[in-house]
Length: 372
Image (cartoon, rainbow, N blue to C red; front, side, top):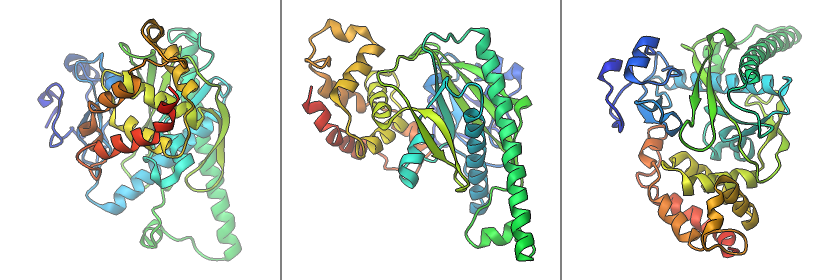
């Protein structure tokens, strides 16, 4: 398959993306996002991405599938190490107080293996009046890319030094990757971010609040490399203040302390998006279910999130907490239209129907809805 064979959405789960990214001319001609970067030695299918709806072919590559499980384990470990490097770069940058983390990386920190494997980083820019088109936006995006590369080099140098010291103390040769993988450990090897290869694109042009997507390439021993995706949104009103949160590195070597959404705020946003987005995403249903089963969402916080997102909620009949009177019923109906099939392209092991997650989420949110 080549890029010209790719029709517009929807795409079946039998479609396969080309191994090489489209060149700039092909991307422009076909209306493809400029941030498309398939993994060269893996199988990926096109997934509809609402954030890219301003492109004629609004897609992203699915999570990669590898014929060799060990190779796949090494790749996913390397990507997670790359994400940890980027987050360390953000935490140590001059913009650490301007970037609020939300999304799958936080859920992984809070809930471990029960959460989705994080594949990207999502940030909200502060203060709220920071405009996406300001010069300082480009300075920030470029600076974060460079900070991520610097953090990757510093972390790998420290890792090499620690490994050398350990082997010297033990007077034993280092184990090679193959022997460690055979023992059940899938080492990522050295993972380096390359800021010069960064590409970016606008996101959410027609929905929500404006944003930018940055895709940073990384290289790792024993893999064909890959990219990490960073999404930055602007002018997002906050119904609750963020808190500094420690996000552990996957290898246990420490954590990055970053400004982050709380579990309650994260859940309020997930409910808002599932209720109001034109294309509700399966990942938001999955995440909301996990959050709701571990977090009590105050009715007042959800009401504030709704009002900040759309003041017209106040124009119709509402409860004392600011909810539309029909919210609970309307919310459940909205869940029936979630793009679950698109989400299953990333996680084909999930049930064919989203109904179990719809039931779990609405049950878990019952105390919140009871206060409407």
